[in-house]
Image (cartoon, rainbow, N blue to C red; front, side, top):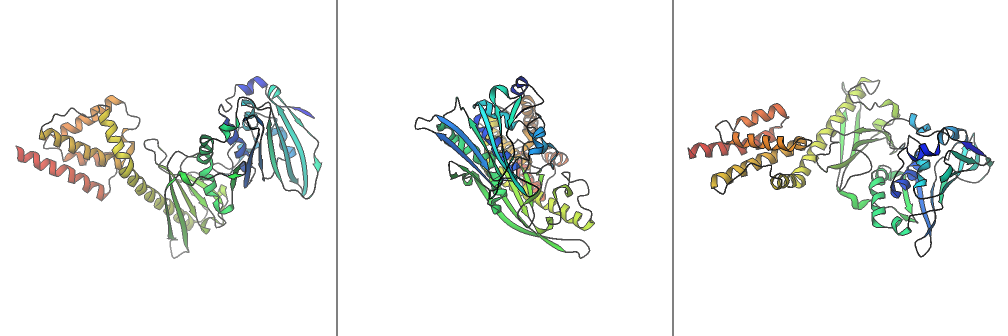
Length: 433
């Protein structure tokens, strides 16, 4: 049975569909996880020359409910998922583009789905052709037995794409980058992705891990709660922003909260997974995405949750500063020098000492706040560094610490390290006079 969408074929083509095959495949994988799948299998049917007959993406999710087709297939840039809980890792696609993205490299997409409705298993087929995406064809729904729910989308008439690309390291690495954080989130629930039967591995993306447990107490002698914290630093950007993923005792995410380190100043790619029975009594809608409002109805749980977020921020702040000190600061200082941002220095002992002091000071400032040079025009950077250098040449150089304290919060250790840089320099300068 032919059914019409609410948009034209031309409008779909101009609506910003993915331009890269690996993004298209990722869209269909996410659709499977959106449908509560735990397993997604990609099968590339090709010959020895690399010609692709078809690409199949199947999942063991809940299937596509027949009555939702007017919304899930009939409307474009709209989806039944758009009203889902915000900031959930289990609902990714919300604009309905995924079902049309096959047109980048295939002439048709065919969905075969099995869904349980009112305790009865039913199956039916949906087809969309590349040249007439304003229509979709739906078969009659048929009752079946002894099957499991799930959906397979089969992409046929593949063109401009060779199987070697879908088997390449580039493709596999992208999939690991896109889904590794999600598979790790659900590692205890046996979530897997297979590509031609091989399980997608993402361990090589993990640069650093840390496991620890915190016990936080409710006020006024209330109950205590244990939080198991799993920190990961990835060696490259991942397919999600940087979150605290909150999981209940069943190891399932009930909410995700943005960490306070979502900036592009450095390559500090991280995820923090927090598991506790503290979250067992709550659904996703109970935890607001804003940390500035009351999150729970009980005051005691509000206090515990705020204390947890404060502990997480402090922990991640220490991890970032460790990462910057060990990895990023040397790169940044070298970049400043290579681009000519530093003041001009001669070869005299005094000039060498001035440069050494400025670099040591910049190192500490950058570790404290790596965003200091991010988004700043080059002329302003040269000006800032020039003023710092001039101030270091006066008896007021120790006032730099006072200026910094007004601009960025400093811990006692950070304040002490900056003093150690400024005071010896100031003493040496007075002695030379």
